[in-house]
Length: 319
Image: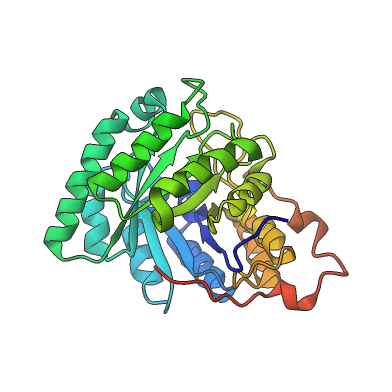
């Protein structure tokens, strides 16, 4: 039997990865209620938005307000996504705990998504690190490597290129690195191999796995990642999200399904499942015109599911 971590962290990214991918613009008050209820359900790591121009993503125009609100909740790790140095400066000014810079290992996807080559993104991370250090800020920098298992535009993405980008991000000054299956091409065998090799390079700086459920393998891929010792995963409530370059694709692993799987494996997340499901129902009302995903909300918790597993106190280490 494989040895699994005793604790895991689910970083809720629905407020960013989820909402940016759907036309509904959720009012700021609802987003704050989402953060507050997620916190009450035990989630302690939330990506609240992205510092991008409002004209490009009006869904995320209130990110600064959300960071300020989330920072009032004790012990909550507040992260944001930034596409460039200007966004990073806003993140640092907001005092976000962590800023994530996305990098596509696929050259074609990188140009389509960020209008930069992977190496240009790596150079930008170097500038962000210099700016962060000069400001005296404690905001951590995470380099997130997307399209790590393939790309709808380019097709094959070599593992060697993913690992080269990972090492280059660390060399440029990223405090953390993560790997994303942006378009849902990965399977457990590929995840186990790539994550195992990535852990050899990055060690404890390998921070997070990000899996889309495009072909129904997100939870299987989490399981494979757990086998390599990775114990932090992105997920979105109700599985919302997607990728503009993978039309028709579903979003990330559903937070509630992932929390249920981990609880059943005896891996503590600190999440109260009934409270998380209640929040999911609330968000579903807010997003009544959108396509939602996930399975646990349909079937509910099994009648024989131990009550002590429905809420799993976490002893995971903070940032």
